[in-house]
Image 1 (spheres, rainbow, N blue to C red):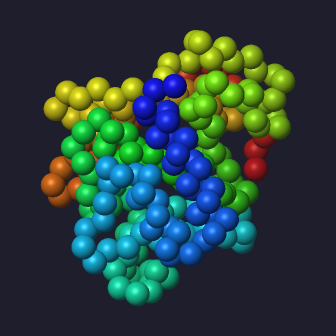
Image 2: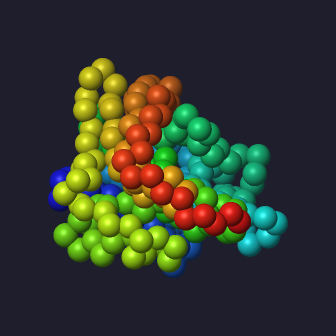
Length: 205
């Protein structure tokens, strides 16, 4: 287990704790694990949990100013490229990895119905990994852990983050993301996904 996997396991554990104890104090404690990230002065971290209404929803972290985390006019949710400008990222390999973890957090946070398409399973705890946990895939997929790359971060002007994951509609995927840590905000770009084991559970929500 490398340092990136260890940090990711801490992150997953902290997310479980935050969901079970959903208060502003507990949400802000995420930065005790993501210790290479910090909020700009005056900003706070909020958590929007998926609503069980409509045809589907996802959860996400967001930043806001003021005292009311539900004030939608002050919420800033990361888009497909930019991590909130209100979050400061340490310019290091671990900083880039933690920015990536925060970015992919919706894939491990609670989802509802159609929102479940984004769900991912990661391989951070290889020593105790019990196999694909999806009810659809369990027993049907033989993944050999020694054939799955570990997460890596290469510093080359920007940070190249590589991480494998499982998704029930994609299969086993190796994702590579360039993370530009800038003064005006951290940008994630050039998303590349290489399918290592193609799989589709055959379920359409």
